[in-house]
Image: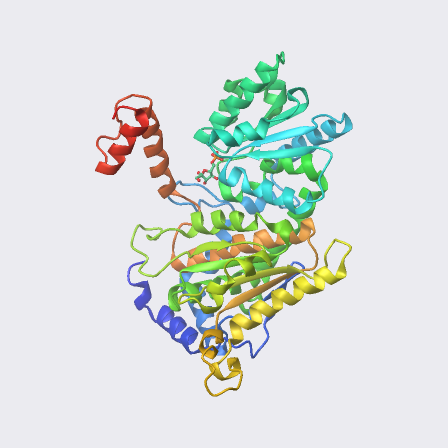
Length: 508
Ligand code: F6P
């Protein structure tokens, strides 16, 4: 919408956000699907609540949410729905239920027969991060069936992924919505060659495909009974709720999928029904818009105080940055506001010894999402007390800061006080999971999905396409052909690119 930043609704919202304080003087902890979401260290005031409500009404959140949940074509540039919520509905459409049952039966049979000691999972982006995250969250103690993830085109990835495995007892799972992604197709071919070189009579019996393009998988030779489908109305980065989670069930059990779906579904209902000030995804979204478009923070730190959530950062990077990394709105007009921030992070406490210095005293700073489990699943309560204390302490220090006089040792010429002082006032959110259960993880991922959706509604952008990624993919495939000695399909390049193409091709 042209001129959005000049509208009364935006100006009131921005003014209220600037005037609101962020000293956590009032506590706003939202209960959502078993999670506690504390936004007290974000900008809060009654005026801001009123302005937010008017802004969301103006931007049509209610209608947009209804369209999302009813499977309308909310992805307007591809004329598709983004109906991931229906995948976790306890009463999904028949096609979804059938596929869910096929996955369950396949896994049950493999378990009963104790088949496949090893799994090599081949997929990238949305066909990789979700299973990786869920398996590292719930398989951190190791499982009888081990799984390796191969995503990268770098040949070391597939070489290392296959190394040392028994080809006779290995299942290759190829996950790709399109079944055309370069990395995945190359790696799948290498895995096929590996099985063939072990003289396995029918190597495709050891292949499973998960895709929205089943025809292509069948053409490759994978038996139809090993092809699990999902649909073009499921975005890659929202596909964990589909057959894409088959390796999760093989690795850590089908009950994990059921628990995650139940948690996500509960968050869906919370998002649909909770009032704005008690609606966790909406409050996270508003805080994010304030931080990005009003206060000018260019990035968001994500720090899960749980090493099992190591892959959460990558998962959220794709979710947030592919969804919100846009500068034009659904009509193709410039958004005229700063949109989706860069997302980065790592588990605490490692993060504290890596980049927290920058958060405390760097010139830019960034809002941070802190995540922690109230209860741990290990045997050492002292470790968990320390972890909780670190999480709360870092958050409080970022908020409170330390003045020069507080930092001083009291002597008249304490020259280090200025170095010890920190500005404080850094916004953050604290998300507390009761413990790391499938239900809690599912709820948390849905929380972020809906947060991203609300932000896309406020900024007026399509959260479900990713045209920018396509450009680089096309260029790479052209350059790969050039390196193989074929003429450039893209025409000429800049001088440096031409120089390196010639050097790498050995023609100069
Ligand atoms: O990175 C671009 C992208 O298209 C993602 O959106 C997607 O998750 C990923 O590539 C993998 O695509 P596919 O599942 O089709 O192999």
